[in-house]
Amino acid sequence: MTYRGRLAPSPTGYLHVGHARTFWTAQERARRHGGTLVLRNEDLDAQRSRPEFAAAMLEDLRWLGIAWQEGPDVGGPYAPYAQSERRAFYLEAWRKLLAAGFLYPCTCSRKDLAEMAQAPHADDEPLYPGRCRPDGPTVFPHADPAGVNWRMRVPQGETITFDDGRQGRVSYVAGKDFGDFLVWRRDDVPAYQLAVVVDDAAMKISEVVRGADLLKSTARQILLARALGLPLPSYFHCELVNNAAGVRLAKRHDALSLRALRAGGVTPEEVRGAWHDAAALAGLETRARAGRG
Image (cartoon, rainbow, N blue to C red):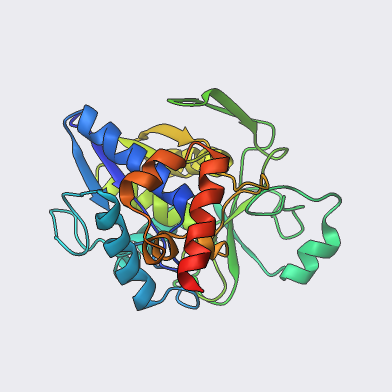
């Protein structure tokens, strides 16, 4: 298969140095394989996604020195490249999963889940305790997913194992490390897990390069791809970037956003030279704050 990698930023804030390092790695791996790099705008979160962030992420990535061959700004054979325009693909997958008995409706609120949780989980989604889970596979006669949360029934006790290009062999146990997870939200938005699996297959992505915080999501996505009969890409999960205090970077850390660094007079070469060194990053952060002040 011809190598096809992807960048998948979300326009919910400005990209930071951690994003930059991961996306640079994705570009370099695509170049090394003589492949194609695809940019996909993951703008499903309508409440947090903003046009100015979408425009900024394209501009900031180009400033950094990253180039892609397909995307919302350049087109390509697998358009559209914005998730907000791909609902029909997700709906088709949801219906297929529903008809095969993999999904069930969940009426639990966030408050319900918080009260039922027996222990905190350092994860993007709490371990679901199974209150709404039917006793066995059930086909629900729904024509539209809106109004309730839809969860994927995971095979309790099954070990999901995959070989990661950076982290080595990784395993998670369904029902222990992660539970029945969201596929479609009650506000009628497809969940991240479903959208990513559908889009990576539709765009023929051969390798997914992303941060190590999404390792557990890979196990969920393997189950979804298997249920949908879709091919699996290979995976390469990069280490995360921490600031000088040892805290993982997030979009709320504005001083290390590419936008703030640019405003502070930092060059792309300086960013690329500092993202492996916490002390160097602290120096860039100081410059960015001074530039904004």
